[in-house]
Length: 266
View 1 (cartoon, rainbow, N blue to C red):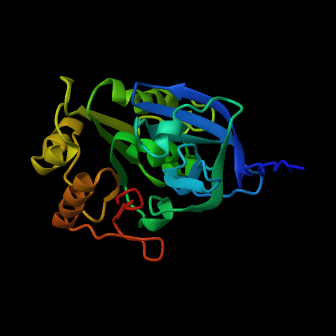
View 2: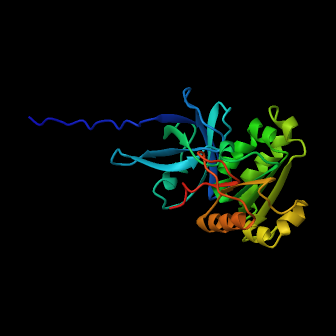
View 3: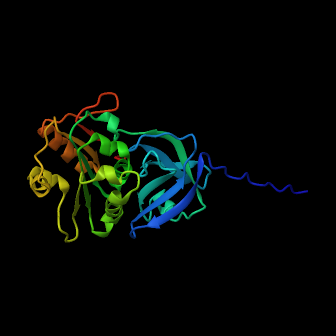
């Protein structure tokens, strides 16, 4: 008598349900998932999220939480890579599906890692805007700083859509709209399409154009704080520019003048 073996069902650990998905371009999408009741995090932190592989083992990557710490759901912003081990599958998720989310938030792009100052610069490329999408919607950001500058560089105008949508909604936000007031300065740039401001943000800092355009003084370690989240080249360029202006790199354990998120750089 032949005994039929029933394969064990794959159990997804730390499963969270997807509540909505928005495709911004052919290469970018955002999605929201249910937030575990016990999860606490600081705006700007990241967690490990992913899916089960065919062999039943989890495939995880670091993703910044794009929603603020007070939100009832968790938002994430991702690229689509056709042959990417995770994103090739993640981009196909729909509301009602489940993903893995390890509830252990960490990261350096948090307000606690910076000394008090007048201005906060958030500088990013591509999906590096995610932690700043969180911080921009956190009342504490606007309570701590007189001015907040978001500088976002993408290849095309369409790739700026996610960030622009968040920025445009801030003044009407019932929680922080009054706090934002005239504090926000938005500086979007493109590198592969014509736009109002073309080129890499690092070049515009180096030649002084960004300060002239925004009518702001060049960085100094008393008034300015900088957060950086981008590709390796941008991170290196901006770290050097920060140091050239007398800014020192900070951390959770020792707050200083600028911080860089390095978790997403292989």
